[in-house]
Length: 56
Image 1: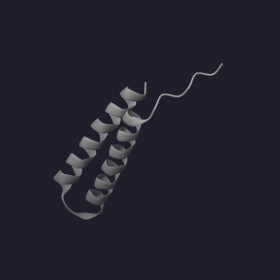
Image 2: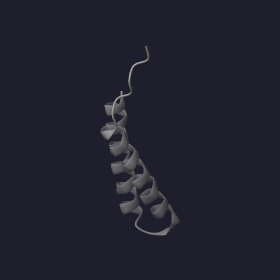
Image 3: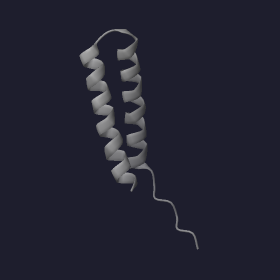
């Protein structure tokens, strides 16, 4: 499940950065770039973290 979340977050990051590039100016573009950076970091985190140990 973490791999799927990671891939979805990377796609969301790409979409947010693309929208920021299209807007190109103003507060909305900065917000889009910030959300893109956040989604990128969360996507990488989901893809690189270790699987939790099963409960016994």
